[in-house]
Image (cartoon, rainbow, N blue to C red):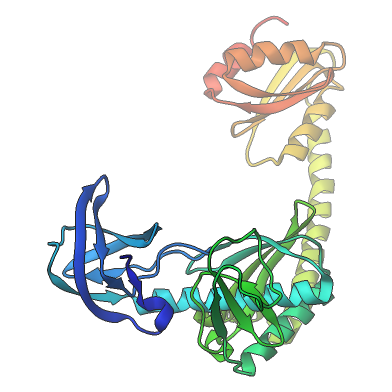
Length: 379
């Protein structure tokens, strides 16, 4: 006789007492089989429940044949009655996410014909892979409809059909099913074969929010939040908006315009700085005697593009010019083959980089003294 699955009888039940049937030691603790259990085993894309059982911790639950095997951090005596408690907050978050995933998948399938070809769920979020792409308008429409389904507080229906049943309703399924078929339905929006746990009504989901959407393997990957996680995401982003509005001295509704203005001003300042730096580079280069065999300079906090620019200006007056800033370098010449030179530089100075015949760029792991000694070599 297998383990009785109390979690299917009442997904809100989290406390129960039962008989310990088996207990054996395993690599990560102990594996315990009970006469009945509220602990949901991993399956249907839903992680297992965790909690307490007879004074020990339940760390994982798996289904093995007709038995539900509980992995614990301590032994339990077969033949004894134990009390179990499922950690409800985790269970409820998983139920909210799973039910919300059904709604979104059903809406996307019915409206656009796209399938949910894979998803990953945990207490943080749900990641869904769909077989086609939606634009911003489509994503917004699907999300708004999903939340209307939540607000309607529709009962979630579950029914098990034995093999060969004549009236199994049309449903979504990722694979060919054998044995009993468990159908989870949200009337009017989704019907899907699923062994996971779900909310009793859609209202228990609280809210549905798509937080990320990107192209993935010819379709899209969506990241979705439900329940308190959706609210926490809103709270965090709302605080950020208020903080940014205060920093920019704009109203919250004008944050985007304020950021764009700041970015434009920053781009203008960068352009002005680039002009000033070029003038400084040219003036400093004039101090280098024309025809200097080699010059090696060390600068502070030069970005890569400015490092390259200064190097090329110096190349007008020196046969070989090297400019270092931190661990970055740019070395150029109008007469020497820098590609060959790069091999020696990277070898001697523990560097990485490359480029073209006239200019090479990269990084080194060497002291200033080691760099100066290297460039004293006659090239």
